[in-house]
Amino acid sequence: MSARILDGQALAKQLQQEIRPEVAAFTAEHGRPPGLGIVLVGNDPASEVYVGSKLKTGTDIGFRSDLERLPLTATLGETLAVVERLNRSDVHDGILVQSPLPKAMGHDAEQRVFDAIAPEKDVDGLTPVNAGLLMQKRATLVACTPRGVIELLEREGIPIAGRHAVVVGRSDIVGKPLALLLLHRDATVTICHSRTPNLVDVCRSADILVAAVGRPGLVTHAFVKPGAVVIDVGINKVTEPAVAQSLFPEGHKRLDLFRSKGFVLAGDVHPDVAEVASALTPVPGGVGPLTIAMLMKNTLRAARARAGTPV
Amino acid sequence: MSARILDGQALAKQLQQEIRPEVAAFTAEHGRPPGLGIVLVGNDPASEVYVGSKLKTGTDIGFRSDLERLPLTATLGETLAVVERLNRSDVHDGILVQSPLPKAMGHDAEQRVFDAIAPEKDVDGLTPVNAGLLMQKRATLVACTPRGVIELLEREGIPIAGRHAVVVGRSDIVGKPLALLLLHRDATVTICHSRTPNLVDVCRSADILVAAVGRPGLVTHAFVKPGAVVIDVGINKVTEPAVAQSLFPEGHKRLDLFRSKGFVLAGDVHPDVAEVASALTPVPGGVGPLTIAMLMKNTLRAARARAGTPV
Image 1 (cartoon, helix red, strand yellow):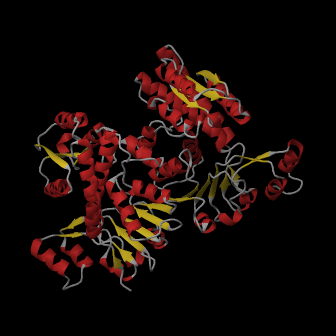
Image 2: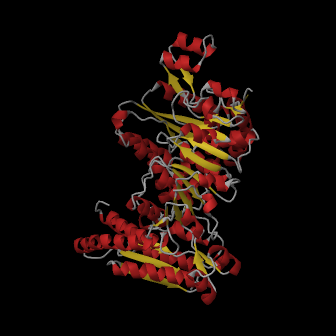
Image 3: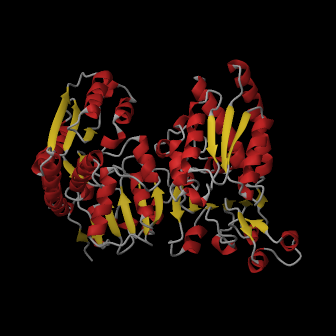
């Protein structure tokens, strides 16, 4: 058996095609495009890549996309001031502060900056009020990665209602919101984490298994019930040769990539899961591109809500 | 085997004893007692009983407890005006609007009234911002019934970390917040509901099983792994003789009570579960009294937060 590969890249492109005419219609009606403001503090290489991709996608589909760049030495107050300015801006409907903020800004800086985003512009769904509305099944702006996973399952015709979904990972940004989204679609949902004693057994009871823990290859074929659908949210930079060799067999092109570049990206799901799962998201090219597509959907939704158009 | 009965009534009394000197200290420091304002619209008999009990408990432990009573014919606007007045009141730290509101007020009246409560006075933990803070593990004011269940488990020395907790029911007021509280205490948590196909099997995998669905006697001994801890959140008014007879054997005093009064209160857990569970909350006298005790704790907490005292 070899799992069907769920192509997140292709779906993300399709979603962008679907959004484009809606963006054009919004722009025609309101005399301005939906606007996204992204705040980037410092120059973390991975953040630069993510932000670049978000800006480019936004521009491609017709958004106004602005980068507010602050130096690595920026203070919390300076960062909050930028968020406040975007909150007041008429031309920005969505605000995204790229995580992580520099460590020097303080341990609670991220929380304070996220909390400062106006809920109606909080396209990452991270403010308490948006998290609470999600819990109460009445959210407009839902965290992008969980929302992307649901979009993928639905578009691929994978039933959720009545299925047992097991989510490994309990973060505020992925694990918990995704568990709620699955629950609200009538899955029976189990949330596991680092303190779950019998993780393999719990995962093996899943019809839909989601890994969102940030540990490369944690979920091996032993974790997967034959025929289950496996969603890999992890995206880990593997730099240890032993880890790379445990993930990819000798001669595999990803192992060659590792040897030439000194690192390789890997999900939380071991490639050998493809032998038992019925469907599987790849890393890269699975959930990642959908996160950006859902950011676009959220920004359009925020723009419509701000403009008083039905979302 | 016969389950240990977890006496919520006794624990509630103990909690009240513990709170009383803290209330006295607050009153001495601030020149006023913590204040609770309860809004009751109409005269539903069950609501009258609950509200009476909350007011009495509040007064007993030294709170200012005020009842804001509105007639059955009150409009949504009139109810919102009372909430707004309590929001502005200096002497009220906690606001509770007794559910249900009269049906004539409209299908979304309860949501709109709850949403109008100032989050810092929302001692039922029902506003979106408080639900979101709970999801993000940083809540001050948590829904009283779930918080009471956790208090009971902790005081009874029942371990949560590493255990499999199964919550049957996914309401905003009990099921979902309780699942989060258990998760944040390192349980592996499964949420089941009316669309869970193999409910018996899932429940039988629980170390801690919580029933919060509002169906008398739904959870029978077949649902319970021998030695599991069973928490019964349901409180159902049974008026059908067949249901009463399915719950209590001939000669049982609760069946006699049913026959003399025409109804009996029963939980979601069938009494026969006592033969397999290691511990069990009774109905009445289990979770119910703890809900009121936690309302008192929340009100004191809200008072301290408003006064700038560490909570």
